[in-house]
Image 1 (cartoon, rainbow, N blue to C red):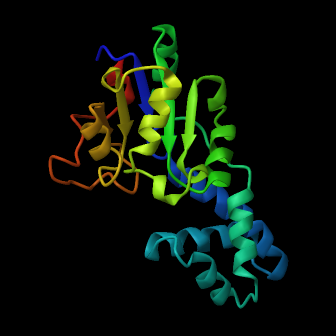
Image 2: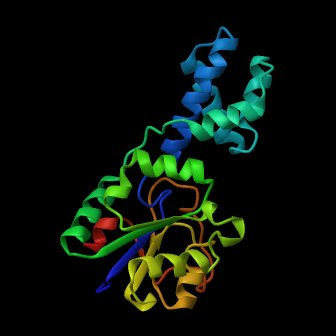
Image 3: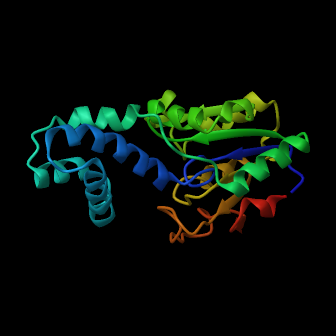
Length: 219
């Protein structure tokens, strides 16, 4: 673990993405409550229940149909994307960040997703004051999302380090580790109790070199 640069995924690595979803649903529920007798809390619960049953894809359509609300779904999507997230870092992530800073290590983030959403999360978590470099691949175009090599090369250049001096830490073996390993970067997978990819097991080329249950194991 003598790396000079520690590069992190964001969602379900540094904070719980399910908290972001609940936060976005709260903002949407506040809008929908203006068009029905149902309370904000009742609508919020309906959104969560639909998400847990069928995933995020058509949650707003399903709940609007159930409540007989004729709402523009694109407007609700924009409310979700543009809301100010109520999220916080995992405790082990916060302790690990401060430890790496104390050890004079360089730290960075590569995260996929819509740039408005991802930068809102970054702002809500105050990450720019700690991390030297942050790459949101949505700013580069979908062809540069992980597992593209582009964000890994870009972040290493930003840190001014060799690829072999860096380790990438994430949760999703579908895309987080395969390219990092091919480039010669170390890889660590965090497996938490909650998250969309925690039960995923893939072949060796997709999995990280090491698997942890807490980021404090890095310390």
